[in-house]
Image 1 (tube, rainbow, N blue to C red):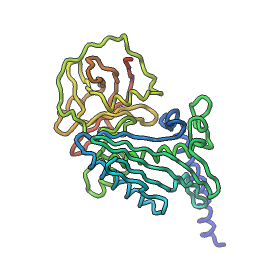
Image 2 (cartoon, rainbow, N blue to C red):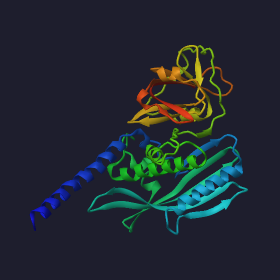
Image 3 (cartoon, one colour):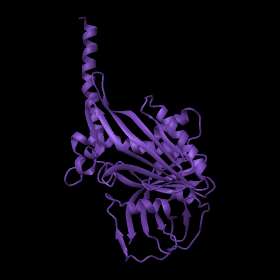
Image 4 (tube, rainbow, N blue to C red):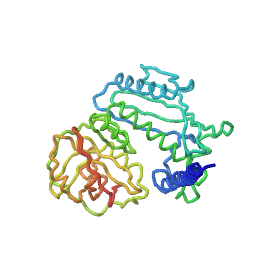
Length: 357
């Protein structure tokens, strides 16, 4: 064996553990992310069912049905196997059901490939201005001989420790990658329904192809594809008593806050006397384990004050209420303002959430 060959082999074997460690570090970081912990894997009557609601103002039932049908068909065809197909479709009922089988790759190196087959069902329920998509009946086939059902493998009961603060190491890769798959599927469907893209890698692809750079949020509540609010509003800030509000633990933001973000009137207060309505919606998310808000103003809205603000407050009003149900205080992350032809989205680190029961 000559010296050149010996050197190449040495470099090869040095790089293998680096690749493995990189995968382990990535999984370890995600294991501490709240979005993968308690209640991240939802259950309905003892069965794991991921779901996402979409509200699409002004879109007919048939248009929603056709868009989702086309998207699901293309998505399943791309998996290139006999199991992945639309199994049921009824335009009158507004229901589409598809079966999917694809690979989830946990890690890949020059010497090993750790992956599993995952089978699941996608079901869409379409009506005027609304769609609900579910991902259920999840099964895994590992190394062609080991078979697991999601309920016994990635549920809170089995995949989290007793305190529900960490993912059990041996099950972390299964739970994390399944949650990521569900979220990515829901974003794909949102884009098919007309939402703006949210994933940085997809936006980069569009930039490279000289297409319009569009972004949106990925809220945990319903995705608002088209918001009916269209004006910037100047109002007098409602007087709010400090009593009657409960401070929310930012590490465990309850689902009703996410629901409010998708269904209530939201006013953004930069000063004490003026409010801006985010025409294209607001949403909650996480960055590096910290909760953040995403607020999008349409291109025709004045944005100078918002752009210069160091802090601002979101007030979420339920229909018929004069006082906000929730108050979210934020510090703007100015280096993360994202602009497109249609919107300007501001990202704010959440400092405090007050909720009125």
